[in-house]
Image (tube, rainbow, N blue to C red; front, side, top):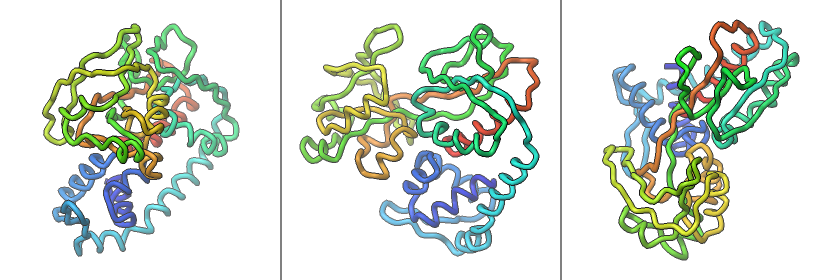
Length: 297
């Protein structure tokens, strides 16, 4: 419930679910779901929602004023205790997902090293699958669920792949309002690991969960979400990107959502460790990764 309260505090201070989601590195849908769960736990409404405004109820304001200073205090105490009690040192070889780590993990690595002066990290970024029993990594974060059942596997989060374009594209070509209208726009296609291209996609409404298949007509196919976002910023094409990858661009208004209620894909990320390996350093880094993913699901 503590995480839900933090989310609620951000909703109050930013004045919207969308801004709170951007600040917390998560999605608007996640913020909405967590607020509803908090309301259920407390037995009363905290916010009043409509299509244009968001008002805080008297119960919500009472909760906010009583707990708004607690978030920073608790975080500071936890950080202080961790720093005092850690004393962990050593060298760790880590594999991280190339795209997901860009906004979610990598920005926090320097602070982790500052807080744990005896730790050295060797980080390898990869978009592929990993066989932890054969490759020389101590811990891996991957979107591929490993086949070896003996490994220690922990699901961290699930994120959606959605469509985006630049404001200049919207002004010049308009934004499609329906799935059918996508056929009239230039879209970036996907190339898979086996070098085949995706000709048909399934768009899932994240609210109703209704699935719609669409023939994907594209003249450019790529295998990199980062480069797809770079192309979308040109203002000449619609691209797709993982929600956490584009949060800064959405906040800066260099990208705008296209059919925001629809997802092209959902991918889960897993933390993988070897079995029967006792290591305070691995446990420390594992906790750090969990904190990085805390607000993404």
